[in-house]
Image (cartoon, rainbow, N blue to C red; front, side, top):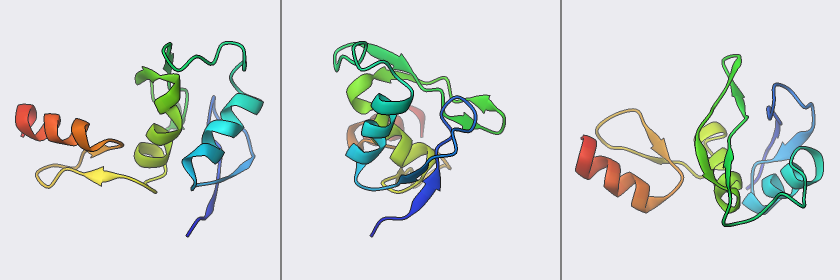
Amino acid sequence: SSSRTPCCWGGFCGTKLETLPIAAISHHLKEAHIDRNAWDGRARVVCQWSSGGSPCGMEMYYDNIGKHIAAVHLGSTALSCPYCDKTFSRGDSLCRHVREAC
C-alpha cells in the first residue's frame, strides 16, 4: 500500500509524492528537480532531501536516489540494523554495516 508525503528535495517542494513505487519518486525528481539530461545511472548525485533543516548530503548513483529516499527519508522500504538505529535502502549495505560497524 502507498501513501503520500511532501517532497523535501532542496527544502520543501510542496508536491505530494507517492511513497511507493520507488519509480514514482525518481520520476518526480527527474521532472521537477534534476535536469533529465544530467540523469545518468552511472553518474553520482548528492541527496538534497532536507531533513531537520539541512540537506542529507549522501552521495550515490542517480539510479539509486529513489530507493534511498524511499528507505532512508520516507521509511517505506527501509531495512533496519538489528544492533543500532541506522536504516539502509539495500540489503548488501546493511550486511556490510553489520559486518564492519556493529
